[in-house]
Length: 112
Length: 116
Image 1: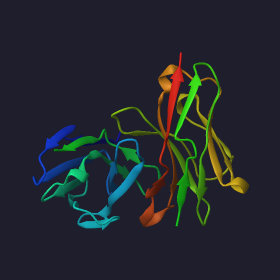
Image 2: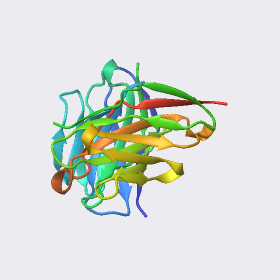
Image 3: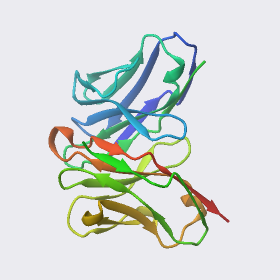
């Protein structure tokens, strides 16, 4: 069966510090991968999606970047965090046949 | 462009009462529609999905949803709510197959509170 992991689960970082969040998927090949941000009491905002290694599409202009160095690994990064980067970050994957998304447990990021 | 509207930000129901969460979508082709549930501090879990065929779809945890093309709606229902159903519910419309498969647009969510 397929599983998706995210780490860390929680993170508190000072403004201006770098960021690296990691997401890995097991049990499937060639998944589409997604990074979402969920602000408190809000819906999901799609940040990035990837259909293959090294292929990244950015949905909104922002302080963040994403990379996909391996087929089942998706990384969200920032060189300098802003207060507005605080939120709940969710990674998800989908397959070409199924269409629905499968979500990881999320990372709670607080920027102080 | 596709969009999803969940008109109710917050709904409170008593345990054992029936539930209906509303969802309206805008999409130019035959939609792929989903309902997800999110418990506090957790990721989202798929409740049910509609691609084609029977417009009444059954999901997990006793939920069902009905696709009404004429109303552009995909409302979620449950005949008898349990306290464990308290969570946030998201409706989503999918982009279809191929490269954009799985790239969904989500509504802003409805928070369900269940009174004892």
